[in-house]
Amino acid sequence: MSDNLRSYTKALYALDGVVRRVKDDAWDNQSPNDDWSAKETLGHVIWGVRRMANAMRDEGPPPEQPEAEVAGESPALAWGEALDDVMEALDQRGALTKVVSTPFGEMTVDDAIGILFADPLTHAWDIAKAAGITPALPDDLARKAFNMLNAAGDAIRGPGMMSEAIDVEEAATDADKFIAVTGRKP
Image (cartoon, rainbow, N blue to C red; front, side, top):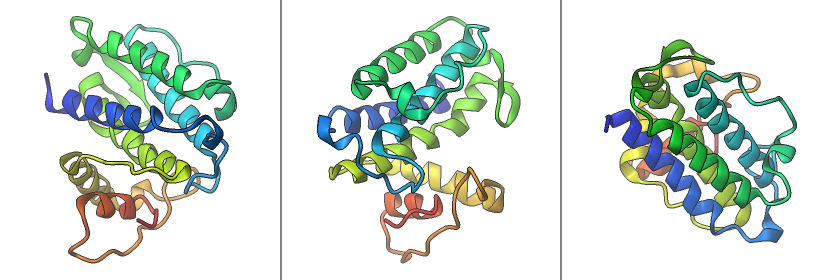
């Protein structure tokens, strides 16, 4: 297993741990991302995970639709199906060396998931906050995501991307530093 696959898988399951604890009546709660509810946030991640699975199978991206529709009537069920789908696609011989088109250009699946792991990790925190539960982000993954995003600097900032980083104390946890660099207040 590559380090990138380990990080991506760990991030997906960190999100899964949050999704499984969200009460049905909390999906419409506002997330820290001002644009989306918890359900819409999950719909965004589901679409991205499906896009990766489809790319590995040489299929086009899933159809564009509102995030709430992607999550559907049962967001946890839709998430579970998407998670199973991407894990099955990743489990195929040669999956990590396959070259796919990503928002960052063409690259191997292994390189792509080495970047994309930050998305489910970020949104695990968003959904947990919206639902009033503890996100429990793994320290090593939060540190890796912080280092990657911090090094990207302004390239990750702007409309439809991340807000300006929030200042935190040097003694802040790895998870708080990661969340702050995404523009969210820990």
